[in-house]
Every structure is written in structure tokens, then in C-alpha cells.
Length: 345
Image 1 (cartoon, one colour):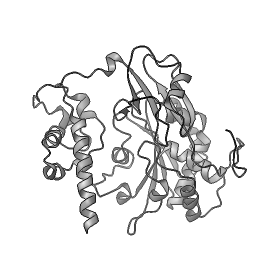
Image 2 (cartoon, rainbow, N blue to C red):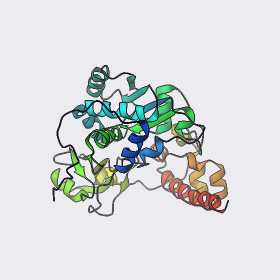
Image 3 (tube, rainbow, N blue to C red):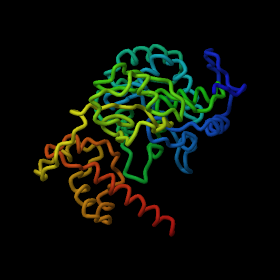
Image 4 (cartoon, rainbow, N blue to C red):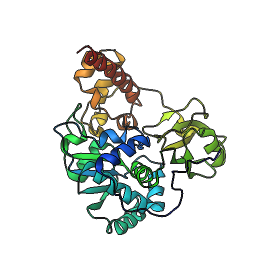
């Protein structure tokens, strides 16, 4: 149904002034269920409460949206620029910093122009145009591109170099939570693909089956090979379309038969392309081989937990080896081993 809580402000009036203390903002964000909407779904209130000994110096807003096909964040900035900027200023207040950066890739000139014009009215917020480069949307890559600092390997996190990174969708959700008393129960979702009749961005409530969005975009094309939850590089193939939209669902990508077909894996030719493209400086061929042989001790030693699962290695491999599949297996297993080891301490 469409029954709304009376406490939610449903008007389109922009509410700029936030009189709450940083602690009250964090509490409100927590109660509204706001999480990172780039896909990781990490609770926003935790990021805004740094561990002892760590102090935030700036807030960086991730508006890069480097996955091809996805345009949800781009659309959000064009339609809700002021709301996003108020959300950024609220995040800055909550993190107790005076500097905020919004990183946008150069392939979105309309968003850069609009956000730069609007940001002039908000003290301390700067729009940073960035080179188009995958996977620039990764936290560590974005921090390096915007403020030139490198986050060390896990367990180090962005706050260790003074940065709090939030997605642009999260900034909008924070505005709605704090200024409009609106919990996070809907988000913008891209439904697209080369054969899709009417590719669109939809404001979608959590729990809506993806099949409904596909129908709204013109239905499932006849040449559908795969339906991906997310983008082509980091998204996961779905077994059916009745999967519900959740807080981290940025897109539904419908790939045709030609795009979805996987070439047969060939022997590794030691070309080192996977090594040269890895944004984390890892050796994907080695991690994949070790995972295939279940040498978990060595997989951990070779720093598998630093992998951000961007898929660059598998995409660039001329032998079509399933590098990311095996690395994900190794990362999941090693993560379980580390958690079990920490639980015994």
C-alpha cells in the first residue's frame, strides 16, 4: 500500500539548515537505516564514528560511477543536486570536518557543471573532476585520486589517512533522513542493456522484484543471455528475476547472448597483463592458481584480502582464465579463516 508515517516530510521544499549536533545526526542516520549505497552496504553511522586514535580530516563523496552501463548516481546528481549538497554538508558536520570533496569522472560534464555551480553556495565543498579510469570508484583509488594519499593494506581503512568516503546516493539518503525524517526505503536503480527496449532509471522501493523493473523498461529481450545484479564488471549473475531490490542494488543489466557468452579458458601464457592492470598491485594469476589448489595459507600470505574484486584481471586476460572466480573463492575462504582465528583470541 501507500501508507506514510505522518512524521515524514513529503514536500519538495529544500531544508538547508541543520541544527542538530554531530552526535544527533549520527543517531538519526543510524535509526533511518542509511548504509553505503555504492554496493557494499556498510552502515553509514559506523563510518561517521571513527575508532579511538583516528580523526577525520575530510569527507569524500564518491560520484564516480565508473561501472559502464550504470547511470543511477549521474541521474540523481542532475535531478537532486541541492539535496545531495545539503547531505554532504550534514555528513561534514557529523564527521566534524570543514572540507568536503565530490569526485566526478570527466565523462559526466553536465553533472560536473551543475554540481560546481551549486557547490559555490556551500562552504568547504569542492567538486573534483577526475580522469575516466576503471576502477576509480573503489574507496582506495578515489582517495588517492582526490587527496593523493594511499590507504595501507587491510586492516587499515580510509579513516587511517583522514578520509571518510560516502557514496553520492548515501549523501542524498542522509539529507532525507536528517532533514525529512525519511528512512531509507527507496533508491534510484538503472535498468539497461544493449537490447533493452526502454533503458531507464527508476526510483524503486526496497523489496520490489527486479522482474517488475524489467517489465517497466520494456520487458526481457528475446536475445537475453544473462541478467546481472549490478554492473558488468562487479555485478553478479542472477538465477531468476524475482530477486528483490535492496539498499545496494545500483542496477539491473540485461546482457544479450553474444555479450554473456564466456570463452573457454586456455593455459596461462605468462603475459602479466593481469598484474599490470590490478589496481591493488596484486598478482591475480598467482592468487587464482593458489585458490584453485586450496593453498589457503599461501593465499592469505599473498594478500588476497586486499583484492577489491573489480574484475580487471579477468577482463584483460587474453587466455580468458576465470581469475576473479577463483580469487573470490580464496578471499571468502581466507576471510572465514581470519574471523575464526580472531574469535579464538
